[in-house]
Every structure is written in C-alpha cells, then in structure tokens.
Image 1 (cartoon, rainbow, N blue to C red):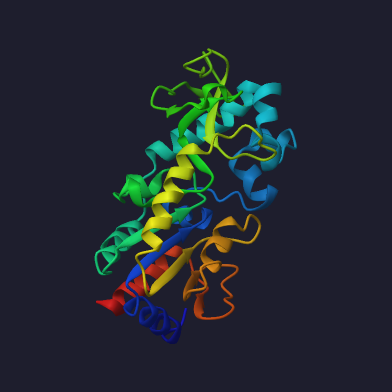
Image 2: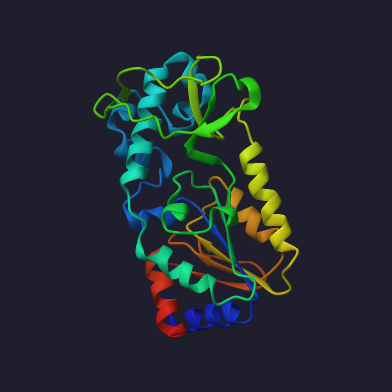
Length: 270
C-alpha cells in the first residue's frame, strides 16, 4: 500500500459523481467476522464441522436443512447470533462519510448476508444483498413466496456440537421448517423477490450517473459474484484486497485489508 496507489485511488474518487461500494466477505474481517476462506478457515470457525469433515458448501445447502435440520440451524443460528452482536468496524463509518461527497451519493452491492451495512447506518434502499440476508426467513419449500423478518429466531445453539436447541424456526404460513432467505449451494428454492427489488432500485440509481467509480472491498475470486458485478460496469475500479488486488483496465489495486486502506485514503483526502 504505497502513497502512489493511495493517490491514484483518491484521484478516481474525486472525479466521480457516484460511488458504488462492492463488498465481499473480506469486508467483515476487521470486525472480527470469519471469511470462510477454504475448508481450513471454515473449520477453524466451526470445529464440530471439521470433525465431521463437512465443507461450507455441504452445510450451506437446502439438503442439509432436510437431512439434519438441527445441524443446519446450528450453523445459521450461530451466525445469526454472531452478526447481531458484531459492531461494524470504523471503515463503515468512513464510507458513510464519503457517500455525502458525491453528487449522486453511494450504493452498496454485497454478497455478505450479515446486515452490517444496515447496522452501520447505510440507507437500506441503497443496498443490494445479492445472496440474500440471514436476517430474513422463508419456507424451506418456498410456499406462498413469503419472506419475513427473522426477529423471532433467538434459540440457543450448542456451539460445540453446532446444533440448535429447542423448537426450530417454522414457516409462518404452513408450519413446515423455515430457513434463512439466503442463496445456498444447489439451491432451487431461494426466494429472490427481496433481492430483485433491491436490484431494481440499483439500476434506477445507476442510470442517473455520468462518472461512477467502483470501490471493491474484500471480494475474492472463489465466489466471484461481487467482482463480476463491479467489473461488468466498465468504469474505473478501486480494488482493495489482501490476497488478490490485481486490476485489469482502468483502476488501481491496493493489497491491504479494508479498514487499513480506507483509513489511508481518508487521511490523504482530508
């Protein structure tokens, strides 16, 4: 993270009339959240799943909710409790301040399901959660196409065994098992209506811009949804990534964590 790279990023920001913030799992690392990078990172966070040799893609699947619902809800229930008690790091506050400096403001596009941008005070109408949100539920069988807030899910989780205790969350329409409204692996039942509404608002905002800039934070290539979203716009891109900062075309790559890079740019911006 050299002064030259910071200066290039700052020049791109100053020339823009709108800021698109695209964020992957690396954005939450500075808040103490796991990024599940590879099985080793995933198993470090969930030893019970390491012992069972279950990968992230195996656990994060509708099939697991059908085959072993207490394990599936143990995993997602633990994450829900974790995200509820986690405070967004100072980088979110920096981004919120920056949003006011652009004529058209800012919009967030994130694959994170943790709700940290909303918790940090970002306008919910200017956020796209492309993989859904753990803070919303749906029926496992997608009955009625209904999506509702997960505020009533507070069951204790046996963290050692990664299993939810007590009554499992139920669909408020048919009383069958409920699940998070998150796009999982091998998922044919995800209800995307909420995310589709978010994407519609994003497209309308995008049409108002003349000189947008993309600021990508902690988005890797293993699941490249966020990278593709930013790159597909064909506008200048600032990529902040510890392991994979390379940028093709117009833009700059900064090999650093999200918080450190944002603080460095902020210090130069003044």
